Length: 103
Image (cartoon, rainbow, N blue to C red; front, side, top):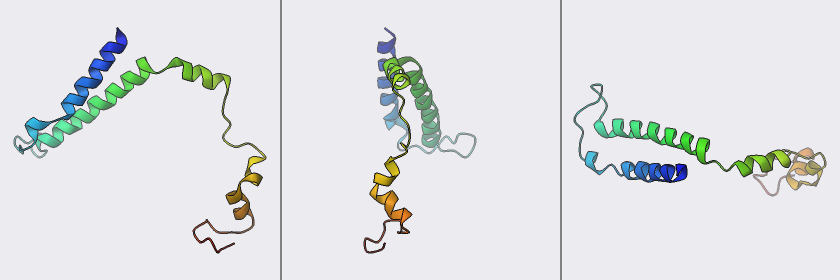
């Protein structure tokens, strides 16, 4: 049931993004300087951020977190840099790789 509500929220937020009713309006100015369309999209962005928080909080697959805890990924393995052609090129004093003739 909870996932259906989240799916309905996603569809609703998607439909609210199609802001056809403010396309040709400048007035009224929100806070005296902000056009209504821009204010609408600022509010929409906050709604979208809140929706993403809800999706991560309640619909994130728990299996992914469990899998990562079981098999952590190390960022760099010790012998890997020597086998990497770019790393060995930089260790020889080569450049950043912009010029293929440089080395």
